[in-house]
Image 1 (cartoon, rainbow, N blue to C red):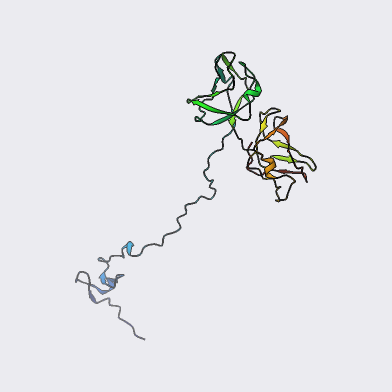
Image 2 (cartoon, helix red, strand yellow):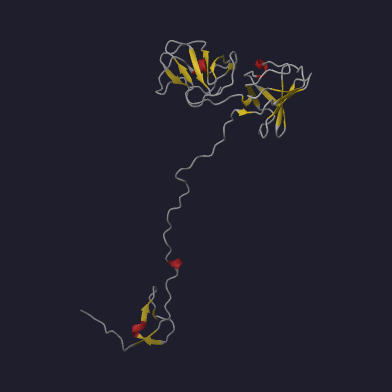
Length: 253
């Protein structure tokens, strides 16, 4: 087997400087140059780049951004103001964020200044005619008979259509009466409610006896209030073929 001398008494000439150095103190660089240890230059980091690792962008428990749905807002005591002989009603709702042309529905108000509860709480709603940072106005169908504030302490304002909880309709076999679940609805018996985005099938996509066209009729239904969280209506045709909760997750009323 071939072997080499240790070179402890030998000299070597550096490929870099051309100077003589003890052979035992020489090293070989990455490019093959035979140089003294005092002249050694390691390989530049850019010539041996590290393999980049993962660059994750998504968070494990991310929640997608969304446009918050309009919700019912409780107003302060006596939020309405009218002037005698005028049909314009001013509503106090600090920081409301509404715009001219938005439509609202009034709930939970008391009668006052010549306006009945039925007039104020119509489910058709009212369109905003003027807006400031903390107030807005609507036009009522008749003029006020008094000047001042009114409405009481339980007035709430909401959009013309409110999103209901998932499967808000409860149906009973053989009946056309449907119970609607809507927390703190503020509605009154005789109000007309129009339902939209209704799924008439049950959770197993089976027929329930009702169709979407019947439940979501554009003319709506007159309701009968059961309690603060429920009211009923009678479908104009068809009856339930099972006991179930239906409607899906996108019903508005």
